[in-house]
Length: 450
Ligand SMILES: Cc1ncc(COP(=O)(O)O)c(C=O)c1O
View 1 (cartoon, helix red, strand yellow):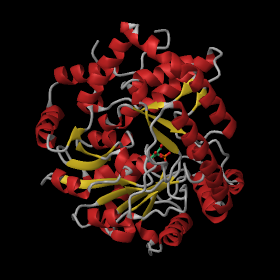
View 2 (view 1 turned 90 degrees about the horizontal axis):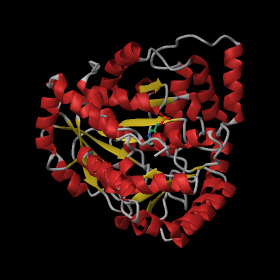
View 3 (view 1 turned 30 degrees about the vertical axis):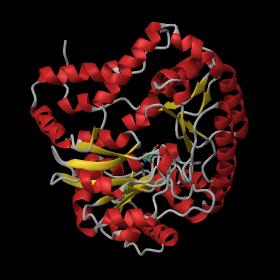
């Protein structure tokens, strides 16, 4: 019987990094030994002080709801930390603590974006941005960036993509999947466009070759900063993040937080506080290891025939041009998972602009990276023939790709047409929603028995 799900559900696309991970886990349950380079998950433990503070808080009975905006001490420490890293002064009153950066993202888009509103984002982009925008009824508008330009945002292209319906510009620096850091000049020019900047700064602190990240708050006091403890402090499972928002936004966000999430975990907030106070050496040690691994992976991938014109400046991903091995990134990622037992994320996950690329995460041990490169070296030369022959696999992948490209973030210019469609979809009867849902389901990674 068809389920009466809301139409917005059908607009969401699967997060392919998670789909590949889930498939890899199924393979491991069947005895495979997969090297996981697909998910953005640090392999380091969190700072010991964070674990100890969390355990102590639990033992002390800090197991309750807190102020929906977060513990006052933590908000103060977050404001001080941001001020220390970027030299801007932040009123702790403008900080709202959330259960990860993801809820902060959803809260901010819920605040800024209504049905048919547009949000500009550089592509390739973190896959959850367009989905969060769509959940709010909005239309993500992609402005392409290119490897050859160091994935730099073209401010003129953003200007051309702007319409009266544009509500915000999303910036991610250092970026997932490209590792690119946007210059201060670029951020300042974006701020001059007069639209709110939503700046995801979750990878700050994980930067290489002396690179420096500019916070959006350095160029726009009205910016929305999204950040969290998952990456910098290797605290993914703690689920702790925050937003720093303009003063008028705090009250509506507080009301949303009260209603949707109540508060972040009490004892986890203590872990966050300890990480900020004592986690610095852990972050620096992890960053030194990532720098070494980045080199190992970039050199290794280049030697295998992947294109990496500019090494990533930050985060812990190499977004490698894989077109030498065929253009279909999903088919390639699936094949490498099955035949080399190496998990990678297909570039199509990050928008149509990412097609032909694979994302490799180097938050894995040096040994794991070496072993992955050796396995790829053994399998890649055999792909050509096997990829030409079975029509079934190529056919399915091509169909998925076509569908993925059709369903992807709308290129600038088509946004108006899409907006009409989005608005129609928003109020559209179940028939269309069912068709959309069917399409979303078809995009799921096929079962490994295939
Ligand atoms: C750019 C970016 N923003 C946000 C997130 C989500 O982080 P969190 O674990 O804090 O929800 C991720 C996770 O991969 C990310 O890559």
